[in-house]
Image (cartoon, rainbow, N blue to C red; front, top):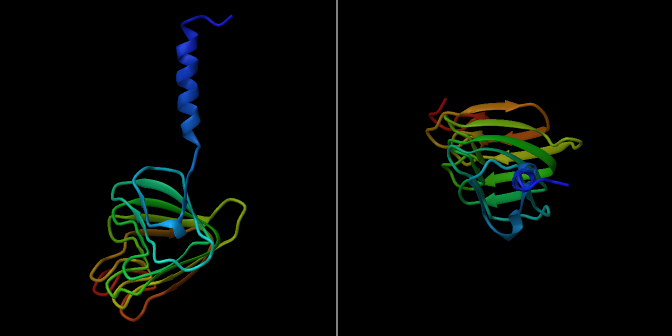
Length: 172
């Protein structure tokens, strides 16, 4: 027989453990996404092009898995300014901006980005920056944050004045 003291403890324990490993799932094709919690988060697309965007709010530390996401937008496709993100790749993912001042995956100084394959998958990330922005890193006049690539196939191209991976025009 369980004592009356143990019942509230067991209920509290069940509530806490039920939230620990649950991922928040998003579909990029249904709308833009703003992440303001640690996660884990899983963003899925169907491979078709969308102009919806991903924003990880400043000071958030999050693990995000991209699955067949394909963004081509005027503005920043994936903005993690001031955030710490572990980005896991599954399938073929594309982040492109047509705006001259942005990186495709904006991770400027003050941001920390680590890219790797999702466990058990080989992922690809193709990123294009605008005219003055890097593909991955800083936008126009911005230095890059800390960027580490541990796995995955990365195809990064800047338009002209930014780095493929690093700072935007006039940024380090």
